[in-house]
Image 1 (cartoon, rainbow, N blue to C red):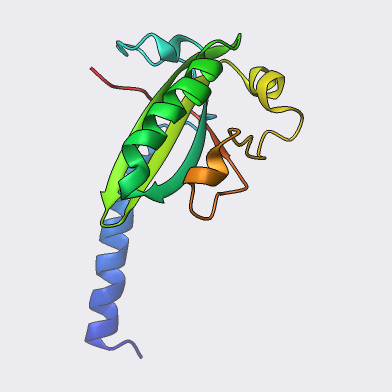
Image 2: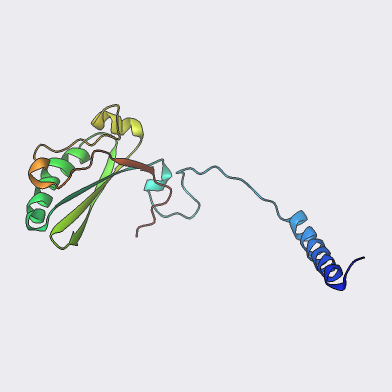
Amino acid sequence: MIRFSNFFSIICGLTVSVSILPISSVIQIETRAVSAQSLPNNRTTTQSKKVVARIWHGTTLTSKADEYYAYLLEAGIKKIESIPGNLGAQVLCRIDGNNTEFTVISYWESRDAIRKFAGNDIEKVRPLPRDNEYLIKPETKVKHFDVLLDNRK
């Protein structure tokens, strides 16, 4: 025997199912592969082709941060930007008391372009000659990401 509360639950469930059925027959669900291709109305130029971001982090003493930044620009960023296939770089800085963190994001046409700079193991850090003078616990790995959206203005 069906109780009123069970009967009411069944009726509510059927009502919801029947009301959703017409919507689901009209809606088409499309599965899309994610790519770094340009999207319509995207005003950025870097998205017209695949772009790979290579991200490295390093930490130095805040007392040495200005000196390290000047060294990083001269010995690192200028070299990176001169390599064929490089699309530019950004240097981010975060001061945290006695330590200052730097994040370098370099942009590349492809992982093959990165290999020309970094060798076959593109995840391995390629330290600058004087990094040991500045860096606290240098990282051993670099991360790579496909840039899906670059919406900077």
